[in-house]
Length: 166
Length: 346
Image 1: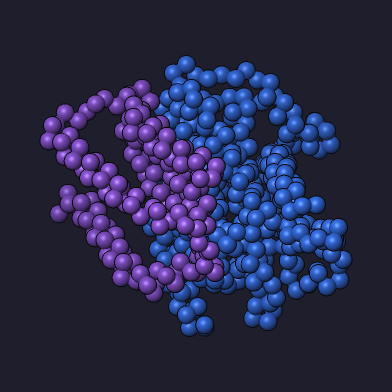
Image 2: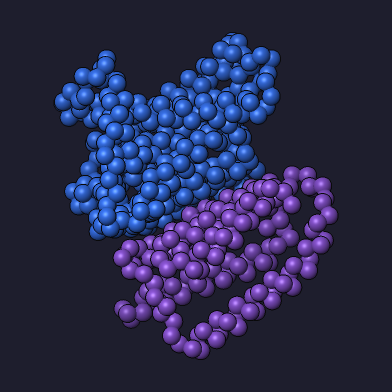
């Protein structure tokens, strides 16, 4: 375990805990921002600068900015988030989903022992052109399926926005 | 000298250099605006009023530091540094000169030549908005919140055309590294033009420039501040050096954007038609390339000032309309045409 990993891992976990426990909406969003940046730092440590930059520019720079935008539209600094979810069925569903995700994570950690053995990095690892050719050769189907998913979301957004005028 | 010492010197030098440019820019802004409006501007402190920024700095530092009672204290304090830091950090990938040989060692005049160069600049630009948002929200005042809100919407809108314009540049040069891009802009284009990005991507340059003005919150796109509607927008409640950091961060941002413009579209440190490395010694060449880069950057910094005191502010719906209905379609068309041309010429 090297120090760099420990520092940023603790930062990520701590910020994630803060995100789900914070009473204020905007500080909670900033906690999420810290998680993204800590994760980006870890990606950098894993010699994947492109992924790190995407993490920052897409998640922190675009998606979270939208989240913050909505928070600022709806909530002023005086308001605190109450425990608004009173519906029992949602809570039970949330508990099940949470348990499922934790179980998934536990199954995933089984693979960790393979990772402990250090390997030499392949030539040009993490270079943008290498990632590009992987995208469009080996993982073309996944890439296209993801783009279809985005297209569906886009069409749905336009439909929702237009509904009133029909 | 060991490598890490050289890196440290480069980091400190660029930090100080960025600061210096920002300091002088506050003076240039006031003097140039005065010139354009047939006034004198600040001309009392030192020769031509050059010590005015110093006097302003002392004033800001010694002013009483007020935090509004209803503000969120921690976030209020956090806002200004979060705005200024990303602006400084973006300088790390700017190639502010070619190379210089000192003590038998070849030193590249760039803090870090990473292969994801300008994506890093884009990412930091996106992070910079949080400084405004946090400041606006934490102030707990309606003007500040509106300013912060406008900043987020504006940033999201103009990040897209900027990204599209930059993508065409990537297609053209096939690299993300700013240094390699500058190296690819040497020589001539069509036999008589300098081989600069602007001649190959004129539309991309215009889209990039407009988006850059919006990203930097400069007039005509300074809606997050917008004195006539929002007092001063997101930093209405700020005073003393905290306000100073906001104002200062803006000028550092301008410096970065001007430097990126120069390296992407105007050949970076190289002079057109003349290869300086042929007849200059290694040390003189380093200094000369640095100077050339700075002069080009200075021109774009002045352009920022020039536009600010020439063009009136947009209305908010006009700003959004320009971003989504004009720049993004134009950027997409430009991207498609460029992709086709690149594909045909490979």
